[in-house]
Length: 308
Image (cartoon, rainbow, N blue to C red; front, side, top):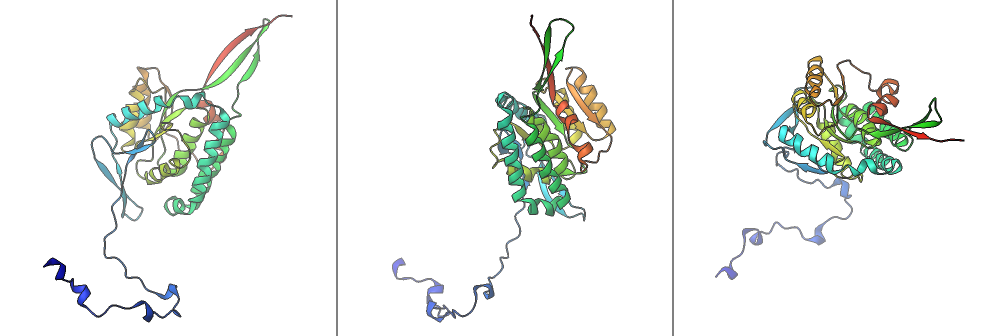
C-alpha cells in the first residue's frame, strides 16, 4: 500500500510554478529566509606535525574578547602534547639542511597568503598589527639566503670560517600583548635560518595564532617545521625548557616565568633567551633584525691552514 500514499506537501496547492516567477524582479531583491540554527561553537585544535590535532587530555579553555564576550575556545595542551610536538620537530630536521633560497620562498608564500586574508585577521587584531606581521615575514624571507658566516684572519697562516648554523629545535613562548605580531616576530627568524619550532602563543588571546596555522597549511611549509601548542604559557614553557630534546628556549613574559625557564634549562645546558621587559614589537628597530637571527643561530668555527 506504500506506493499509493502521498506526502502532505504533495497534496497542497501552494506551490509556485516556474512560469509564475516575475523575471523583472532583480535577484538582489529576493529575500532568503534566515536560518534559526544557533552558531556553531568552534574549538581550535593544536597544530602538530602539519596537522590539526586534539589535545591529549581533551580539555579546552574559553577565550574572552575585550567586552567579556566568549570569542572561541582553544585546546589545552599538556606535557604529552609537547612530547608529540618535539618528535614532529625532530622529524623535520631536513628543513635546516635545505637551501636558504627554499626557506625564503616558503616564507614569501606565507606572507602572500596572510596578505590575501588581511581583512579577516584585521578584524581580530587590528590592521596595523596585520600589516606589520606581513612586512616582518617578507623581511625574514629576504634574510633567509643572506645570513652567511664570515672569514676571520688568524695570526698564523690560515683562515677561520665562522659558519652560521641553526640551533635545532626551538621552544618559543610568545608575548601576550601582540598575539599575531609577537608570534610571527619570533617564529619567522627561527625558521628562516633552519630551525624547527614549537610555539606557545599568547595565553590570553591565542586565536590569531590558531587561525594563522590555517595559513601555514596552504603555504608549502613541511610538516613539523612549525608546531603550535595553546594553553597556559608558563607551565608549557617550563616543560619545553626541561625537555632534553629541545635545543633552545625563547620566552617573553613575566619575571616569574623567566626565572622558571632559566632554572629548568640549567640541568640540560639549554640555550635560553628569556625576557620580562616590554618590547615595542611594532617598531622594526627593536622588533626584528640581526639580534633575532643571531639568537637563532650557532656559530661553528673552522680553521683552514694554507701556505705560500
